[in-house]
Length: 74
Image 1: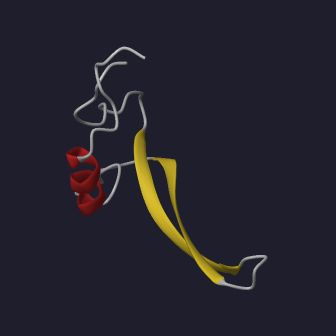
Image 2 (image 1 turned 90 degrees about the horizontal axis):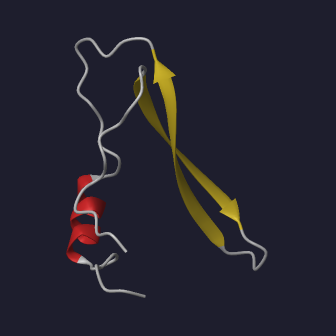
């Protein structure tokens, strides 16, 4: 399996916007749960705006340190 050291560059002709939505819900065991969803959408302009990352930098750093993908055969 191929190892990726970073997320691929976005492709396509549209600028993508991103927003974060946080939800709280009650699970079947009556415990409170939190869910974070990222929504990506086409945008008409990126003028004067800073590009967003695929994920929070802290999560990227954590995942970067873990060998999730290796070059070893399966």
